[in-house]
Length: 256
Image 1: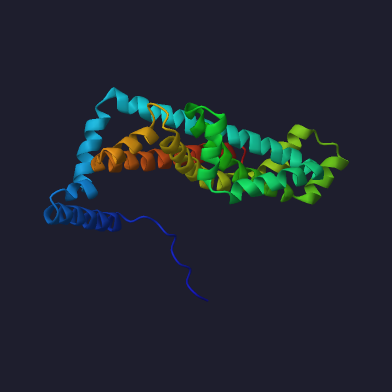
Image 2: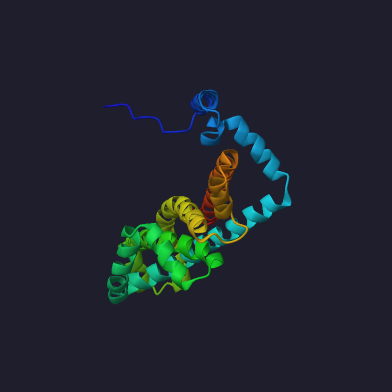
């Protein structure tokens, strides 16, 4: 028997090594070229700039605006995808009708949807729509798969004994669907933040993180660029951890 590999985790020493490499590269650029700091800001430059930004009210308004729209799109997609998956599990016609749409959304580059959506929507609505669009396929497909994985014998017994629908949902379908749903949202939360911020960078709605990234690029404010990127990564991870804990709490409460 071969020994199983340990679970991949981010190690502090590895992070510190790469930060040191980044710091050294940034300092080297600054020494070689007069304006090298514009090409690659150091981690210290980004940290100092992030501290300065976090001390302003505009920073927190920008963060809240983008977070509300992107996470709102995520929640909207989760609700709609779960509902349609439940209906598709009961209707072969609906399942076959929706499959081409889901396949197209999975295959078409997100930038194509962003540009097309700009024709129909205001820039302020773009990140909500795009994040919802990117979240829908994985949640829909996983919930549908989870419903299909429900124990057929238990379902047959429930029909024979005329178990109420509410008890069937809680006792049979929920335990089957929840692991699939958890896996889907873990993937979808990363997708919604990447696609939502990309939509803001292209649409440039006022007072958003995407606009801040675009301005940092246009005016060569490299520390701002890295600072806002770090904020996006941290907020994305925090939202993922909190939402997955909520899902786990529901599973624990239901005894799953």
